[in-house]
View 1 (cartoon, rainbow, N blue to C red):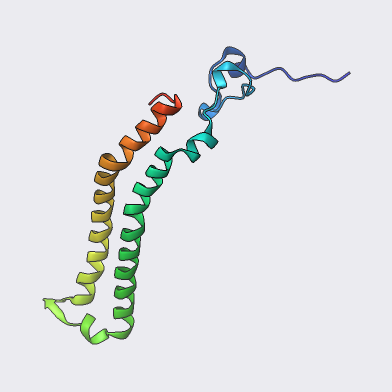
View 2 (view 1 turned 135 degrees about the vertical axis):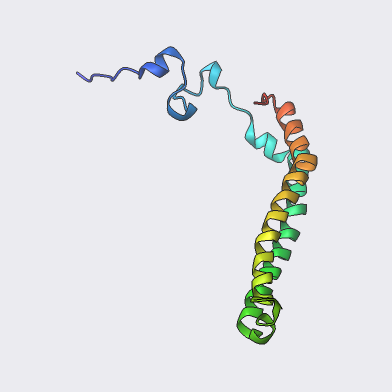
Length: 134
């Protein structure tokens, strides 16, 4: 009466489907999942959140203030922003280019911070949770 469609070939052979997503039922041993609730409640995960926020919150706030200052100077301090520095290059252009430079500097700083402080904590959490590093 009701025909059941066969499983796609990738699932029948055990190969991952498109994008590495498989549709093996959760009770299948190959599809065992870590206990995310336990991981989320662990002290190690709390430390990871603390380390992440310790960098991201102050740097984001500082960059926001720096960007807002640039915008406000552009709107309300046209005389200052129009001062020539060298040739036709003015203070506004220099500060605008410094926005790009500060973005790059923050990216490099975060990359270094993550390597030193965040990645080791992630490896610790993965090891204690039985998740293999890739």
